[in-house]
Image 1 (cartoon, rainbow, N blue to C red):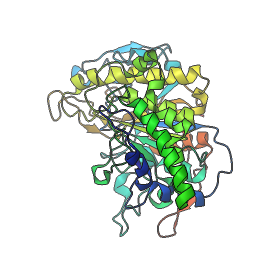
Image 2: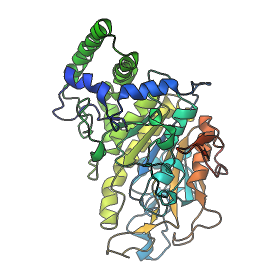
Image 3: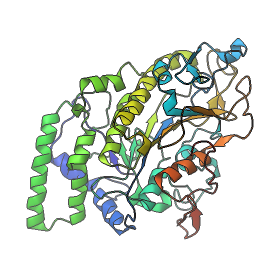
Length: 445
């Protein structure tokens, strides 16, 4: 998987050698140049990209009862330590640790009757197909389904100078292209899979620092390496795909998108205020996601960590919810103010909910609960300011028909102009539908 370890880690040094290694970003020996050569042989875009999407994965399984599906009338061992607060939409209550979202509840929809997956895997969230349905295969990943970003890259590729699909802080295998081919892999920003660790463009990996420590050095070296490539093209006939590889990572649009220093201190403070002790700050990732979308990227996935709260559920959420709340508020209000919100569909969720009864494993924890959970949807011209779905009085079971991830992705594909009934050939030449269940969520469109 193509990995760009992201701009601005503390002590990052940028030199010509590091940038020239852009032609050696590895995926089993495959370079960025090879990826672009393959992409050039893919079907060209036949229509403009009217909409885009941001998928936010809360890795570990977020607690529905402590966030968006609170049960204040349930017994204490169910309702927990938090209280609901009213929002700007009558009838929609959310956790008191999310007051910023309470101001913009008209801009999002809560899907309360969600059933997503039954194990720790983001496959269902990213592709609509669960990991356990993947049989063993002679070719690694042969039977696994491509993620939504890879499908969009295949069926609705974007401009040649901007990547179609970027993945931020994903550490796993869930957001891959698989049988669609390496030309539809995401550009990965942030924590690399250690099995695919590579030395490429210097550490963009550490997103814990807002400041670009060597920003001037970075810009000077970009210019110097461009001159080196120009000389090489004249003297050695540099492959035009290698040139385009460099053009993507050093073009004004892409370079500016990754340069968070271009944002005002006020904006960065709105996204990144507060300590987040469970991994990279979600606000930094969502600010980068917004900038990438503005630069023309079609699909951005963001993974946040720390949501597997078997222990210390409430103290963990006291730390995690306020930063996430502020970041979501900043993302939605920024897109709304710029007139882009209707063009950017945003989906947030995890693998499952958490056990309604506290203390099944530890006194202060909630365990996995696949029978009920939530999804959060905003933007994309979808109907917002509502709750769709319901759970029972203790948050244990879905009342009525559950909402599955395939329905949510069918909705997102509809927004993006991608036909989910399209059949794409797998490794064995067999046609596989983008989704085998394609009914969108009633009430969103």
